[in-house]
Structures are given as structure tokens and as C-alpha cells.
Length: 110
View 1 (tube, rainbow, N blue to C red):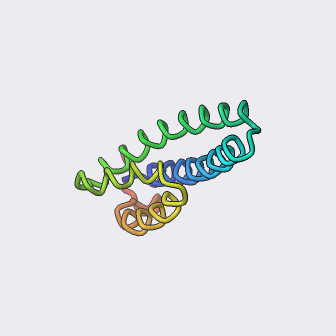
View 2: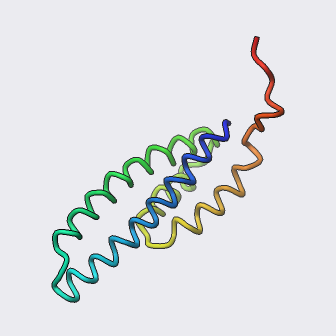
């Protein structure tokens, strides 16, 4: 597996997790204080698009790492639970790092 697959997953996991926290904050302001309805709408749309990208990237990583369906499902769902993606990302990196081929040791193609 190429290192770029893991890097894409890590970036999208962090971006999705941060946007979910921002969305939760916006929701608190919208429903708790009655302000920021337009901002909440924009942030929710951005998070939705980013989450769809996260799903594609995480699915790609899961297929290349040959994860069982349960593990793949847990990684995909972790993008919907605030702060869960941070913890799942660390665990995934530890598990997948040995599968990543190092650029220096990869065989050269003729």
C-alpha cells in the first residue's frame, strides 16, 4: 500500500473531526442561544461534503488494508461521533503503518 493512501485518510479524519466539532458548537449557538442559523447551515453543508469525501478515502484505505466489514464500518461511523475520529485515526495509523511500503525500499520499475 502506498503511503499517500494513509496520508489522505489521516488528513480527512482530522478535517472531518474538526468540522464536526465546529458544527456541534454552531448547533449549541443555534438551539441554545437562538443565533447563528445561517452559519450553522453553511457549516453543516461543508461538513456533509467533507464527510462524504472521508467515507470514500476511509473505504479505500479499508479495502487496501483488507479490513473485515466490522472494522471498516467502525472507521466509517467514527466520522459522525464528535472526537471519535481523533482516537480511531491514531489506532488505524498504528495498525496500517506496517503495511505501508517505504519509498526508499520500493522496487524500481523498468
